[in-house]
Image (cartoon, rainbow, N blue to C red):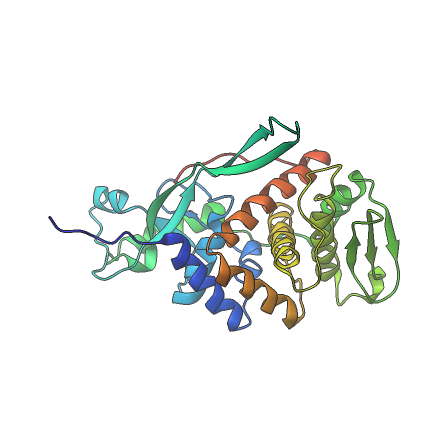
Length: 302
């Protein structure tokens, strides 16, 4: 009997993410304002963590188009996947929260159980068939984002922010959320390089704000550079990207190199940290969008 070593997909994607961060690239930033990642044949747009995974592979492989196709779908079209092509591993489903109570103390605790599964897709660059170009052209015509006015996007961002009733102090040169007083500090609007940088930063801090014990109750208190601090920064960064994507705002959040070093430490020690952070970021983003009545996400399959 032949034994086949199972591919550790968590480790594979984490390694790619670490490589990009070491190169100074944050794969969840720029792609969110471009044509959404999705299935070429069905037209479904990937959601949750999957656009981030697609962004990582697209950046690493320098693919031109954000469209993917399943192997069986390619066979149905009589398209060939080039020999040696590497699949992109996407995630269907996610973590479910399980609450338990200590019999002796009565203290309640919550942990998350992984209920997702993997499926494989190939970027259209992996297809060895000239007819795929025509299909791409049709999809682009229907779904490509072009010519969107900036003002409506910013108005939606303002609506989301105002709906939260957050205690904010403006001024100074620091943007942060202070859990001990449940307050956000933000530089003045005119001090930012532009509107996009302002809203991306604000949404980053709003994601932190959702972690307060009166809201989503994440572990958000930790010493700078610690594992818990670094993990929460990763949650906030991805959460801001999710929110920017939902509001059609290009995330231009710029962070100090020390943040990147902290993220690398977390990812190297725990290859599932990225996926847990993305899951918590999705919960936070949905919570904020629901608060503002702006959540229009639809569940889609590959």
